[in-house]
Every structure is written in C-alpha cells, then in structure tokens.
Length: 469
Image (cartoon, rainbow, N blue to C red; front, side, top):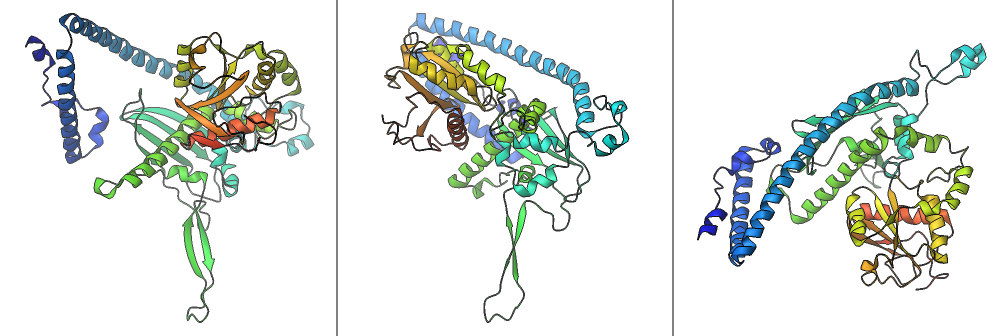
C-alpha cells in the first residue's frame, strides 16, 4: 500500500543523530542506547502504521495536514528558543555592571558611592561596619528552601561568602554557579563551583552535576562529624574509639550524588533513591539561580529589616501594607475558564499553586480572600494564589466536590496535594481562616511536603476540635 511506504523509516543512522550530550557516554553505552532506541522506534512505528491503516483515506489526509502544522510549529519553537537564548545573553551583559556595583556595596569596596564618608566624623568612621555584613548568609536563611539546608555550624563559614555568580554553559548545555569566599578558617578554596550538565536545556533533563572538592582545614570539615566512644570494659585498648560520620550541611551541595558507571550495580530501589537525590540537588541549584542571584537584595532585606517591619520569621509585612492589603483583596488574580485553571497549574514548576474556589461576593470567601491577599506577597517566592468563581467555571465542581461556600486547594507540579487538617476531609480547606500566620504555616508545610514527593501532608495544627467536615 502507498501509505505504508510513507510510514517506513531507516534507523540505521540513528547513532549519528543522537543529542550532543550523549557524546559524553562511552562507545559501548552509546551503542546500547542506540539499540534500545531502535527497538522502541520500530515498535512504535508498527503501532503507528496499524492506527493509520485503520483510518479512512479522508481522515488520513487530515492527519497528514496536522503533521505539517506540527512541523511548522516545531520550526517556530526552535526559532523562539534561539532568540530567547540571544536575548538572555544580551541582558546578562547589561546586568553585569549592576552586579559589580552591588558587589562593591555589599563588600565595602573602596570608592563605594553608597558610603558617604564625608559626613562622618572620626568616631563614626571607626564604628562604621564595612559593606553589608553577612549579606549572603541572611539572604539564604530567608529563603524557604535554602534555610532547611543550612546547619548552625554552617553559618559561621557562610559569613565569609562575598558573592554568588552564575553563567550559562553551551558544551554541554547547562549552567554554572560560583560561590566566592573571603579567606576563612574553614577551607582553602576561594571559589566553590557547582555545574549542571543538561541533556536538553530547553526541556531540562539533568545528565549530571559536578561540584568543587572542598579543601577543608584540619578539624574544620562541616560535612562530617567525629564521634568518640569509650572502649568496652576489659578492653586492652584504653584509648577512645573515634568514628567519622556524614552530617547535614549546606556544603554537601558541592558533593552531588553520582550515578555508578556500571548499570549492573543499580537496583530499582537504588535507582529511585538516586533519582530523588538528583532532583533535590537540582532543585537547590535552581533556587540559588532564580531566587538568590536574581532577587538577592530583596531576599536579604526581608531578614535585615525585620525589626522595623514586624517580621514573623516567615516574611516581611510593614504596617501600611497590612492596611492596604485588606482594602485591595479584589486584586487577587482570577482564572476565568477551566483551561486557564489547567494552565496555571501546569505553568508552575517551582511554586505551589493555591486556588480558592467559590464566589467573590460570598461572605465566607471575602473573609478567606482577605487572608489570602494579606499573605500573597509574603509567600510569593514559593506559592502563587488564584481565585476561581465556581459558577463561571463549573468544570471542577463535581471532580473536587466543591459544595462549600469557600474551598482552598493546593497543587504542585500538576498534582493535587492533599492535607490532613484533622477534619476528616483531606482534600481542602473548606472554611474561612482568620489567622494569617496559621495559613502561612499551612502553605509552607504543604510546599515542603510536596517538594519531597508527598501527596498527603499533615497540617502543623489539628483543626478537628473547631472545624468538622
């Protein structure tokens, strides 16, 4: 048949068309990958051919037109990625002078225009601190994800961190983070780097991560702890037994998980564990890239201005903002169709999506929206809030049993995250919360649980005595 001929393809030269990142594999591994792909493609081709043969000629013709449309789309998308990369490179150069100025201010470099020393007397100059002390440490501690990675022992070493820079790499695709340190009593390195190699930078698939080997000074290693045990009674060796164990530390970030070269050494359980470790490691890298390098000043201010702005440990809300947010709850973004809801959930890879289903005019919703509006700015680094009118958008009313006046639900990476509030309903918050900090605590708990792959998260407080479903 003529149509069968169109469906035939030659896979003999498949090895030459593999992504450039596959060049890092050994010849044997590449051959195995090619053969696996060939088998898969042949199977798919057979299935695809059977499906087409079952269609009428008119429908097959429409399918061919759809293929042409997809091909045109792919060409446009390739141009988009190309132009986006050029635009990012252009603005990275424009950002560079601003980053240099910030570096000078943070580190108190001579000639810093932010230090008006002409107005200081001698005593003031003596008392004046250089730059912004512990700038990066405060910024990292104020980040909801990074604060979980920093131990108390790490803090003293991170006070010597004076800058973080990043750059894209092209061969292979990926990006590199650079952490610059002043001379310190912990390690010899002046720069610690973390590089992520991606198989495809536009649809990121992590191939591997490479970190700097830290040259710890004697007795100063923060990623290990030494345990001393007394010898057993009657033992000939009277000296204490010392044992070295790994411990939690931000500096473990520079020693990423590695996949064994021999695949036979990996069983299913180990593969899943490695996958989780690599995803967590990559997530931290993306957080440093997107939340610190780009928004590092605001990240630092949230901590350093806490004494002036009623800082609660979770964010910064000044008194004037509190009043303004209560008056402007109607400004929370609305989603006006089922498609818009789906897209809002799909679009967020790093943040939790919080959706309030109900009616703007309903008293319960208005009370809930007041809380949502008041916390939206505080939680914006790790969560985004939307409102959906269940009359305008009834698509989810049956699926999620949206029978209450107000319903708040959580989604992460296109997955509904349930929360056990002690009410017997694990799907949602179906009452109006009044305490802003309680809601922030719930959002943080759901976010952290979701990032660890949990579909059900236990609320930080039991609401069973007050609210029942």
